[in-house]
Length: 231
Image (cartoon, rainbow, N blue to C red; front, side):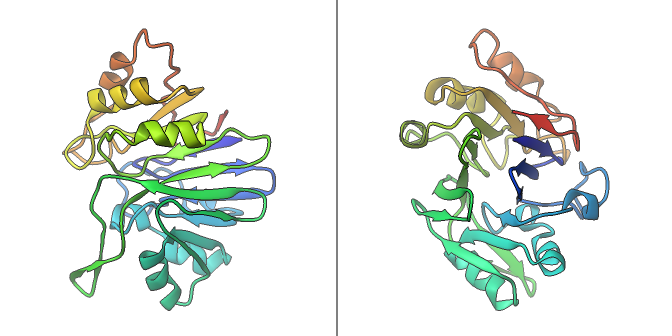
């Protein structure tokens, strides 16, 4: 599997014949480098953790241009479907077969609303997403969240190999708490920080997260934007 970070919480997973975008916030993302067309090239699926604009991002335009299936919480998926897009609605705890891999929605402690016609429209809960494919590492993108005790159950049930962890503080847990979540609950090949360095109110870099996991035996991978990592 190749994992590419585009800044903020936007990721691309390449494996087998699938290209999966998670929270593809490109346009307006201060940390995004490159072109939307290149980032979305060959996309087959778009996973959205929740309805905030910095996570829905370019999903609508990319799905219209490519025909990619959007997988999201049922309320958000319902709205996206009403826009003429191909969607696969889910809810927390559910797993769907996407033809060569599965997606599971798990809990996240965060709010979720979509700004539509100048007002906040409720679009279901915030979630984390777990991607499993035969012969590939299991990836858990936490979405936007604080630490919570049921992360232990998520680890036990799904046994992720890679965790993608928000560390930016203010709107999610900060770097030290994020490091505690990884250290306490997960035995992973790699922990990848995200949701930092994009806005001035967020943690500017991953240094404190890396320092907090020093000596833990957990490999922290701080990716370079747009450069794919082989996991």
